[in-house]
Image (cartoon, rainbow, N blue to C red; front, side, top):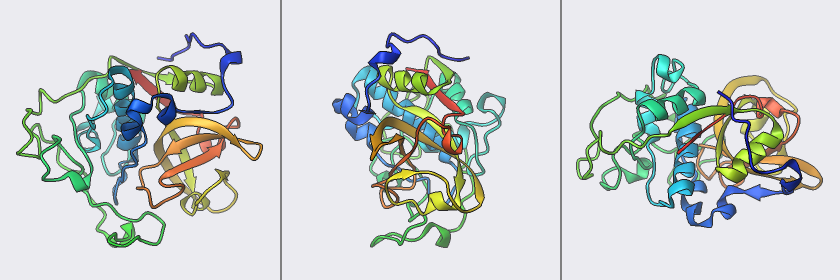
Length: 273
């Protein structure tokens, strides 16, 4: 289904907006940059993180971190639009899964053995298309990970809540169509899940407003969108990638807004907490 009713008028949409500053109490969650490692699980990150952001915005809980691992491993079959873990998937399927199955807590690779979440991400952080910072290896030197096994128990034995009791649910999921509706959605509810076609020149992005100029099509990629603005007269969307903070503008990127650049405005999904 599609969301079309908003209390905000077109004339009330500001020139710029950022979820991180609009709800400052949630900035630790909304501004968190994660790392999908050498696994095609971007779809699980772009959805799980958006749900996580909205959960914080709706509840004020800025400590609970949702598990991209649980989504990547367990969101499969018809419920999940036949997503395939490390071999790609659909954020719309994941949002549907959040309404039916829920998602448990789970931090990053660095959170393993801390006992603070149910299923932290089991795949190692790595440098994506950049020179590895000290202590990090390049993703292409890692084995290409296969999809983690779906388990109905927490991987952290010290975590005190059972897997079943740790599940968090969305009450619905829907698609959002049109630039102004995307903006209103961000202003009213927070982060949205978006997808784009990645070309070679996106991988080498470092700053500014991205527009595709050169290089071949490398496939689809899903991320979360947290705002918009204008830079040197160019309107942009502000997105958070899942390639850790060594890529782009500390893990974020800006992309041309208003002309469906690389399909960024074409498959937008979200849901209600």
